[in-house]
Image (cartoon, rainbow, N blue to C red):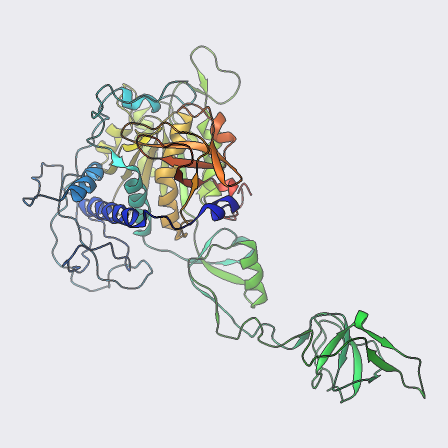
Amino acid sequence: MTAHGREAASADGGRSAEEERAAEEERAVDQALALVGHQPRAGHRPPEGPGETPPKPTPSSPVSPPSPVSPPSPSPSPSAAAAAADSASAGPESRPEPGLTPSSPARSAPTPGATPPSSPTPVVPPLAAPASAADSASSRPHGASSADRPASSPHAHRTGATAWHAARALAERLGRAAPLAAHRLPLDRALGHVLAEAVVALTDLPSFDTSAMDGWAVAGPGPWTVKEGEGLLAGRGPTEPLPDGQALRIATGARLPADATAVIRSEHAHCDEAIEARRLLYAGREVVQGQDIRPRGQECRSGDELLPAGTVVTPPVLGLAAAAGYDALVAVPRPRVDVLVLGDELLTAGLPHDGLIRDALGPMLAPWLRALGAEVSEPRRLGDEAGALRQALVSSDADLILTTGGTAAGPVDHVHPVLAEIGADLLVDGVAVRPGHPMLLARLAEGGPCLVGLPGNPLAAVSGLLTLAEPLLRGIAGRPAQDRYRAPVRQEVHGHPHDTRLIPVVHREDSVVPLHYNGPAMLRGIAAADGLAVVPPGGVRSGTEVEILDLPWASASPWTEGCFT
């Protein structure tokens, strides 16, 4: 969170309503994941309704071909109906999982040899195209200018669109449901990774009493007889005990001699002339026992937990680990991402001409994903070739595949047909957010990579990146979410009648200022922004607090190679 975010973060009066909404979204996410046989992360228990008893978790079941499903017989409450509508893109209505028995907070595989309980075969809905051509306006071009307008029928696009908050929650939970891997990395390669194991102190810190200042080590009350010699320097081994009434020169960080009672800073003491071959040291102010001494174990004792699992490895984490005696850290590998750029109309160099436009997403996505802590392959440009797209999907060994464009229903929009052809599970097919409505989230196979389909318009693609890809990558890497915070907007912001809007903003003192040039095909606004305001349907008046999404280069983490900090 930025400093502005920390200042703006506060408890607000609508907390109970926000918690209720979060609970509804959580149930919607569980329902969507259950439809493809995916269980919530072990140790995570979704909110339960009154009287609900959490069943034991069940393993994934094979996916059956799409078939119609009848809605449950009991009439759901209005809030439950809304949650079910939000998750409609994940599949037809089904009984949501009320919860799971809590276990270890780490993700884990089923116990070998255990007999899984029987579970109903989940049903996956057919891959549906967007409801109207207007909805797909942000799907095709990477640089063309167009207005992000609602469908001609106000509710035409609502049937399959997942609510924005629910889509983000589903993406993160899907990532956290993936098996957790770990490997040992030397300190010089661990930056930006997430700890898979806690860092426990291997020794006391400091491991011996040391001097906090350059000066004099003294024993007992003064004045003190000065011991001649070069004194005590850092890095030297044990020395003889210091007799009572004596003083010895000492450097910062040097090991304190046994029986020393204090350190006097050089500027707070003076020596007289030698009298009978003795020099005496006098203190210029009162000497307190233990002053300017760093005692053994002041920072930690051997066996203390210094950092829990799940901590992002920042430069200070590396320093602490080195101080504690570590040469390597056990960390989660960075998620691997393949970026596939679709579209015959895209140029990689020069000025736009003859209907061709520059590819704005290829140069932007790889560094952005690295700033989110991912390992990214060089973007591949496939054009509008369904066969090339299919081959790229089935041959990828990445954790996440990101496609740009082709998510609508145009004559060369191949993402939906190819996903259907290879039997992918479509979890999100459109999100109730502007720009970026035609984004999608799919899982290619059980245990296989996930796919996030971004619209082709640049700001719409940014919306899809932050809505689906960022929380999914965070879940895969075990990275903690940034604290959610709100800030007041400095002027009125118009909203979409039914959908959430993401508006580029810049922090100014204790508020945020919306930026112009925020159309789906524009990058001028986001290039000057340090955050995105989450504007609810209908818009907000000046002074209203809205949720803020920090951009990677506007925050102090994650610390990764290629991060914009």
